[in-house]
Length: 363
Image 1: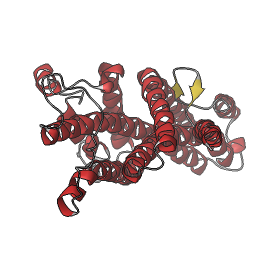
Image 2: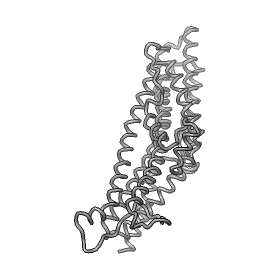
Image 3: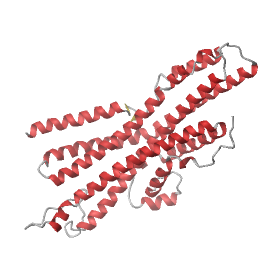
Image 4: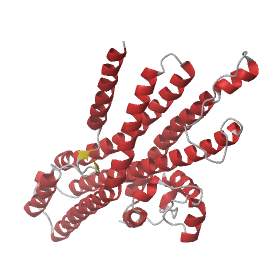
């Protein structure tokens, strides 16, 4: 049923994707930017996001637009489910951005600690200066151009971190949209029951209506699975790279924490970097777990819809949906490891076990 008087013409990217659009536009990675805009912006550095197929990402955004348009024309209640889910996702994204931005800011401050102490509490000799990361500037003396190198390193580091964060945010919002579609599916399943009766006696009009609603549920479920498979294809390779690099960095930072345990300023920098990588990995695994939970609830939605009072043909159709829902939708790391909270816990357990062994050897 169409509720044209309630329909909003607001663009789908206004719900949850506005932050992503702004950040990706600054990085030259927003799929709808012109080639010239991307070329100009990307001259400031390279991006991990190029590993993820931007053409595929644009196709995913187009699919979201189409689903918003279709659901908007079908039902006001279903549209509100999508909008509510997208707004909830934007709150989580804000919290994630706040954590990552705060850790980056504190890391930069920790890097400047020796320089600040030299200014306020000078010693007989100058303290050893810290750098954002150790790079050999061939044409510049690091000591003489310390502040220039610091700001250059900060700018490059923030660009890379922002790019990876944008990748995480896009993955999360795509998964959030899939979960919203599953909630729309639950709403439609409830409506099928509402239009049926317990006497198993249906008029021709009622039967046609039930058949139409059942078909719409199956089509919605099939479209959602297709969308999820496209998300998997778009992000699997990039997840392999980003999560693999993050795991290696965490191991390296853990080793440096153990080795430099007597240098508080260095330990602070390494702990902040280690924590940031842990948050990054958790957010990706959280997105994967969200998808697993959403797809795993489909069979429960069908079961709670009292499908047994429907005509036999519709019962068989819903049974096929229930059988398909046994296989969870998921996002994998390189087509091998399913992204989930379990994967995160196993990864962190491995890293901390390695560090525990290292600490025992050092002692």
